[in-house]
Amino acid sequence: MPEYLFENPETGELISVIQGINEKHIYSEEGKEFARVFTVPTASIDSSIDPFSSQHFSEKTKNMKGSMGDMWDYSKELSEKRKEITAGEGDPVRKKAEKNYSKKRKGMKYKEKG
Image (cartoon, rainbow, N blue to C red):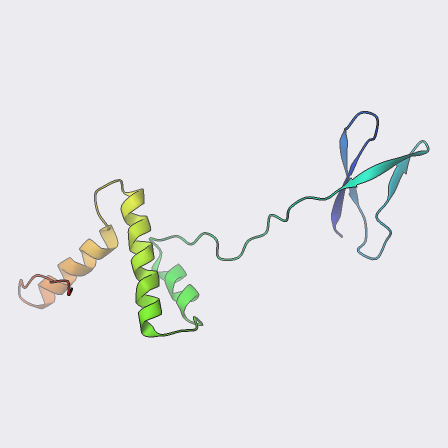
């Protein structure tokens, strides 16, 4: 059952009351009717993804609408977040990928196009 907030008209004190969705959302005590307080919902969807987690990336992109380029753009956004978090040390996930690229190609370094 949802929780609703009501404010005491005299003291301004907030109280929490659990009521059913279909109930009338009013509350009174000792003949005083409390005013219902409306709040901004705190629920969020996909607002924070761990930029270091390959599993989170896979879950986010598996049903993503759009092109392959859109997914690459999203990957680049996460790379930028990793750079911010590591405070100038660069993106550790990208560094590891470039190291593996070089190892598989007998020391050849990755060159970014553009």
